[in-house]
Image 1 (tube, rainbow, N blue to C red):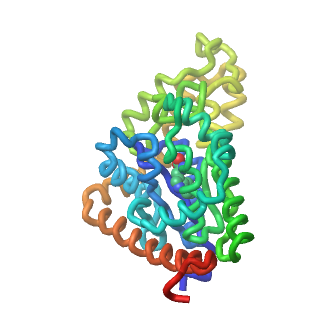
Image 2 (cartoon, rainbow, N blue to C red; image 1 turned 90 degrees about the horizontal axis):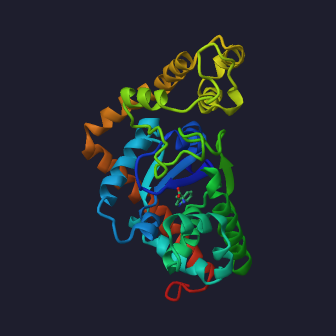
Image 3 (cartoon, rainbow, N blue to C red; image 1 turned 180 degrees about the horizontal axis):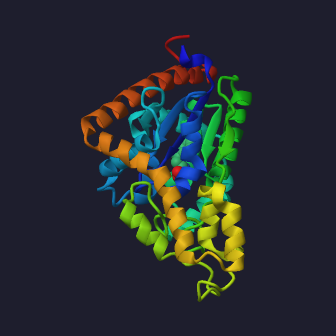
Length: 333
Ligand code: TRP
């Protein structure tokens, strides 16, 4: 059985399309590791509701959009399990048990919670929002994941998850697995504005679902080295956003581009075109896979349904052990 493999659990909130930052931060690792690990990918719709409880009209649409993103980057539904968080009710149960011994102050001081609360303008945090890292710990623990590939902003949540699992195993019985974190090759991809990280809400992202034309025009309008006015002016790659992308997506040409930029022998238009070619090489096969699945949405529905059913069976097994360890399995001891 696939059970001899170690397990990966990771996930995303379905709040919009995934972008290149997600790809280099986490998705690329998931694709790479899906043969080696038994991979579970969770669509965190409940977690999305912790910030969008009043305006959830797009939730179903977003769930299917993120599933298409997964399938388009090459998550193979034959070997990876994609599941929907709200449809595994055992997660709520484990979240509750974890919350019994998780300190409110620890959650209040979680840096990711703090910055998200500020971003959403929450003055008075709800119980559900403050507690979502506890539910995330349950996501990981219920599937006994060994490894969690995530972006850098998730590190505080993973540290908490490890503590919660360790505490559970100490308090009751060692039935849960302490997970390791795996951050991607590029933990924090800069946005097209060059100022902060790439993010949908900052409107500086290249989406995996962008068309070729959209990508071309996004790259064309990206800011480069502001001191470079004429093509032959010497450039400063160290302060150029496009150069940062070249370092990631165009490794083969990087030293040549750097030398030529510094000498003023390659212009920004030319340099941007070269980046565009590389991004197209990465994204064109994704577009092809996407359109195949997008033309067969009943199949995508089945993938989500089957993945969720399979995941639920695993969650039920773990919960049986959890109740036994906590001595709350009153009728079947
Ligand atoms: N917090 C993650 C995000 O915002 C989503 C998530 C939910 C997750 N549960 C998880 C990630 C479990 C890794 C493991 O993208």
